[in-house]
Length: 346
Image (cartoon, rainbow, N blue to C red):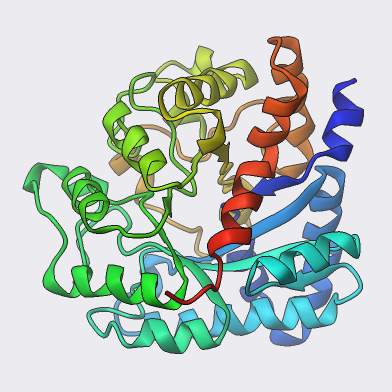
């Protein structure tokens, strides 16, 4: 039953850093590498809608951030053009619907923490012209726009440029992503927002007290905008005990988000990062584990990549969730949000 349900579902993954692995290859290999290494994983996992974040590793910051951002945006276009029979880089809900109708994987370009933008908020418009449709403005540390969750002790809100960024992204029809944003920053965004915001890869702080996860008040706040909270599968964000690195623990977080924010406001943001880290030289985010307080490469068994996504559906069925609710969790909620908001100017 669960396998057939998974096949019928629109499965949306709102955070996979695979672009980092693609752009590490020579440009002539970008499209073929994606076709050989990542497309089979997406197909086997039933992924229909894939958000592709542009994340700039520390080795490129600050001087090379914009250059690397543009290289990764170019890589997204190249891999889409080179695999046009299988995927489509989508700029709005209509293009997503067409891709799904054609049996293609709909790709959506996102920006994680925006180091290439810095305080030059006008560059969001430039990146929007290149296909950007989801954006966050901080990662673990401080940026000219806001503080990431690793700086929660500062209690800081968005900077003036950060406030300008929220307004500009809303004007453009780029969905604001609160994942990684510091607690005070999340509150500030929720005060400012006039359009739905989302968390592309954040779990429930009530179940795992980590600054990267969202409190119940934050979950309710995202839902109140009409947005979606997409649960992160990184093992250390699920439990402080390796014994809790399980598929059922992922479902615990999904159920908690649904119980607090509502079943229409929960999705999947797996953050399959281990393979990407291992593909890079030097490895991505080498100093991240001490900051996180756990091994960021630890994974839930069977969920080290997209192929494992049917395990989540199986667990949801086993836990007694209804078919309509499972379809919402797997991707209907994200699909609905993107249909309504993606690329729609204010």
